[in-house]
Length: 119
Length: 108
Image (cartoon, rainbow over all chains, first blue to last red; front, top):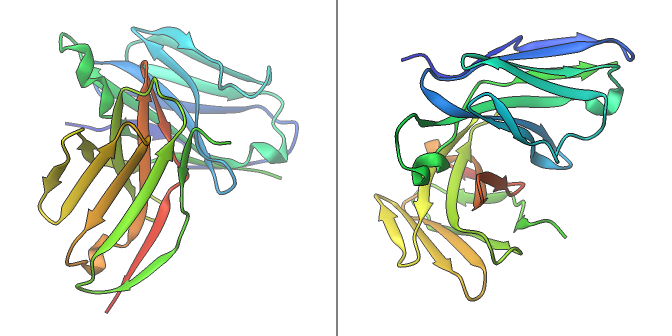
């Protein structure tokens, strides 16, 4: 089975530009999470979706960040305008096959991440 | 104060050594506990869950002390391939909260 697929793997952009990160979760998983990882702050949860609906976006740093999940197989994280402090690795993760008990939510399957550099 | 605290290390140990990592969490509402492993420039992957009674998976032993809000991971007979960052993780509601990780370097 294909794992979580993220694109692009690397993104270099200039301050002020719009950045869109993409994620395809594992088929059948109904939870999708966006994390950001930096040396200073470690892995931080930005937002998560359940059945395509955003449940908790309290980790989104500010209004420049937005995330959507238009269907069960696709999600985007957008930064507009981007700033140098947004430079990080952004991970998408999915979990919980449909129909399983809630307790199986714990194991997250991560994508390979997008290394974002904002100059 | 971070919700999940870990010693960042690095822990530099020879092959065959036993090494232990500790982790503390601040939210007593945390429900479940895990160790994830992250190799350099890779994504985190689940290593093992941590149960109240303690649990073992081969060379790895995890312990949980809910009263002290403390989690540990013990690795016996370290291998070169164990070199990685070990992330302590707590579950609160549907959210997994990650510690910043402890770096382990196993040397021959």
